Length: 352
Image 1 (cartoon, one colour):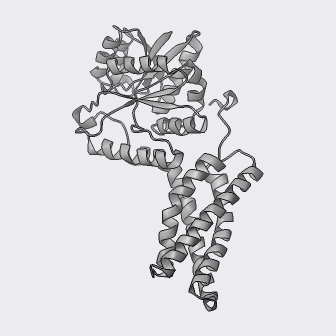
Image 2 (tube, helix red, strand yellow):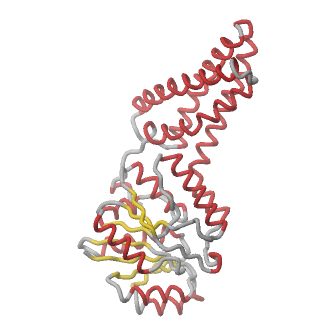
Image 3 (cartoon, rainbow, N blue to C red):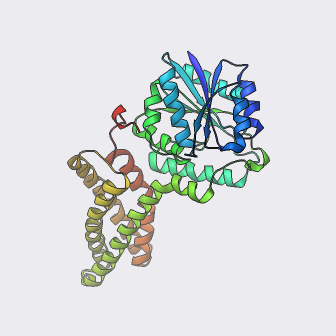
């Protein structure tokens, strides 16, 4: 089985050449994608051609686009079975670790193997914080535990090439999107310990903290936006209903107001989440039934918790409502993502 090291490179330095020289002494074929680095880096890529196949983007398209160009090339030119291991060009991934992932994959075909760094060591605060955030977000949205969600050292075999090409995203968000689509398409993810290397405090990274972080987190931001809209609607209706049902007694008023407000806001929430957040292409009736059952489940817990906080803990009715909603937000998000608004598995017709 052929093994291929795929290396996207944007404005690299001599560490790329050092990596390629090391790869030359292994069973790995090297393919480098010059992602629009420009004429100033022509000398480096000319030398790279002595050790690797070099593909060229005339303009910078992003890491995701560069990886997909490599996948397309491999699909067209490697007809036998193969393993792809993606590596960064800045020296953060060792050849030994790349080989370790390939060997792990040969024992676990049709899976995605990710190199897992140790963040307990001294690493740049930006990298440590960013990985911790994406780890929590990914676990929240998918229910799957992946320690190093931002690792660029990944290995998979030819059975997943079409899948990797089909995943949306052109820049740094692509690698997170791959993890999200793995969950939807029932592709198992495994992690393998690798060396943790940060050179010059990761100064060579082209990661734009603002723009690329937004791309990575936009899914959770979209859900949060729809949830905020629905929460404001729910909370406003709750207060209105409280003011009109006070004669029923505190507990009855709280329960009736909460149930009435939740029913109305749930209808709005279902529409927003299906159409704009999860962009589900599943059956509307089936999704509606599942969402109704989720609402009944959440509403039962919600109302019981709200009544308990007001009646027995003597918390203000408005404050108790906020505590209750925040407590159940993560549960609702995870269930909607995994069970209700599922996308159909990616097919070759969806390739981009």
